[in-house]
Structures are given as C-alpha cells and as structure tokens.
Image 1 (tube, rainbow, N blue to C red):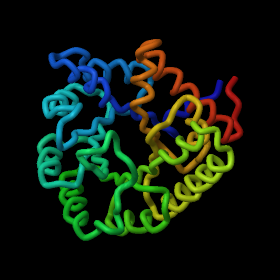
Image 2: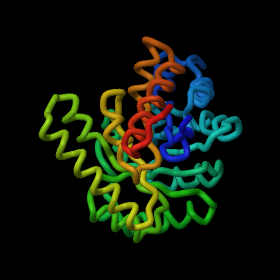
Image 3: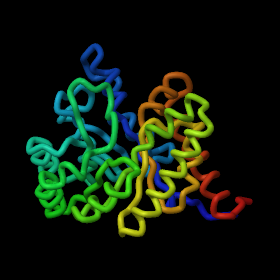
Image 4: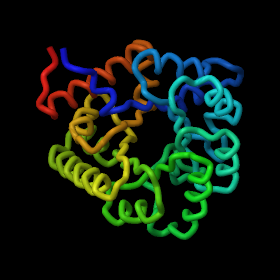
Length: 259
C-alpha cells in the first residue's frame, strides 16, 4: 500500500460562498463554520476565508469563530490595508494571503501588483511576520512578481490559476497548454527562490490534475467550485472527490502507483 500523499499536496477549502448564501437573506444559515468542519472531515488540510472590506460574505465574527474552533490551519485572505492588518494581528491566523481587492469586482480578478506596490507592502509583510503569521502573496505566474515576493520576505506565493482555468473552460487547447507551461515555470522559479508554492482560483475537477502534477506546488486552494458542487451532491462528497483527484495526479506524476 502506498503512503498517503497528503503531506506533499495539501487542499485548502475556501468557505466564502457558504457565507454568500447565508447573507442573501440574513440569519445564520448556512453556517460557514459547519462547512469548515465538514471540509476537514472530508480531507481538507486547511480552511481559507476572505474577509473583504465590504464584508460581502465572510464576517468578522466568522473569523473569530473559525480561529477558536478550527482543528486545521486558517488562511485569512485579505487586502493589504491597515484595517485588515489590525484584524489579522488580533486573531493571528496560521497564514495571511494578501490579495488585490476592488469593491466593484465580483471576485479577485488577478494577482496582486507586488512590483508596483512593493513599498507599501514592506510594512504589511513585516507586521504580519512579526506576529508569527506566515505571509502569502497572491500573484500572477510571473518571474518579476516572484522575485519581488522573495525580496519582500514573503513565506509563500499563491499562483493565480484563473487564466489557465478560463482557457480550459473554453476548450482552448493551445491556450491551456501555454498557461500550464507558464504556471510550471513559475512554480519552479518560486521554489528556487525559497518560497513555498501554492496555487488557486477557478480550479475544478477537470482542471486540478495539471496543477497537482507540479512537484513544487504544496497546496491548492479551492472554494467556489466546491461550494457549487455541494448543492448537487453534498460538500463532503465534493471535497472527497477533489482530494482523490489531487492524490491520483500526484501519485502518477511521481511515478508511484497505489496498490
């Protein structure tokens, strides 16, 4: 029997859109914390939640409850603002992933401009790290962004997989192959710079394997798709299937065949 590859490729489940459904009519149902516990039971290695400036889904009380009750690491996605840094320092999640944020966007539309915003990011990264929080930067799979992330002292980069997923959804084989190559090169470069490599945004059952095959990537963060699938077959089943697809692809890529 082959050893479980969970230590090699972690699955972080983003529970934001459970809160989106709850907030559609107010009240307490469905509860994001219940979703977090279910995701962990099904094989998630961590939970991600994005506390937006406009609080459109996850709330401050959600973060407090997640931090106090979770049995797995909490990854807090946040804009690099004074308000969010203060919240992070109050709750001290396992990691903070700095993401770009605009009020009018539906979802995060691209990677953080770490090159253009380097000066303003220096104190944010320093404050978080001084509190013992691991700092992740959500970036495009771009060499300059990776070099800047390393220079800023980030612990982690999370590669934005949105363009890859869009090409795959459009059945654009050439564009998909090009994006997979770009992500693979970025993952290799980030690891060479001493950065832990994560990836995410838009990943589905059909697109996760290409990322799982990249040996430098140690964590995939997936949310909207899993919550959508949960409507049809349950969250536990959706997370279990994603976990299995990731593990299968990682096993095959490393030349090991499970017995």
